Image (cartoon, rainbow, N blue to C red):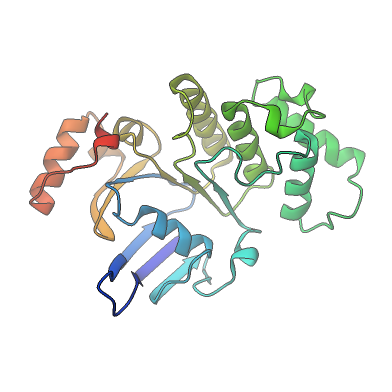
Length: 263
């Protein structure tokens, strides 16, 4: 499904601040696989998402999605088949527009229908039914401005917006990091349900190592722009956070030093 072959990205080339964001990274993700991604600050996690989504072009290498080369395809074209949710609950939505308006625009764009065209009754019912599946009663708040909702409610809606039409790939960029613990747990539960029910190929960046080991079907740990550890379902089974840190120490011969991930 997703094939990343020898992708590199260097920032501030030929300057004292030169830094490799990605260093000849390769990764294959099968259809329907749910991969959690962890790593310290500067490990390359966000850079990986940026080159896959098209918000940044890689310097070398190739990216394929569903058998098609998308390495240099523009971001707006990839947005039709790649869904991305950010850490900021307000990013990706129009806060002064209603819940219904945000969802309708997302749906019309995903189906490549003109957003200037008034949605049909069938379209509205489809959207309402998907919103009702969240179990948060948001289907009864379609006329509420999205900026008035809580962070957890907004992230639940952005999750719905990104999956109204099944994307080829879903990128979750620390999408619960800005939420309180209870809201974060609720959004993660919703994420897991939506991804599994719809068999969506998913990559999820998280700073929570426990969540990374518990969710999805595979965990990769990045360091210095490449993949240091790649664990399948069986390898993750019964693995504790401490076990993973010991494994990282053995592989990289250094301590993992991201305090945010350890707390």
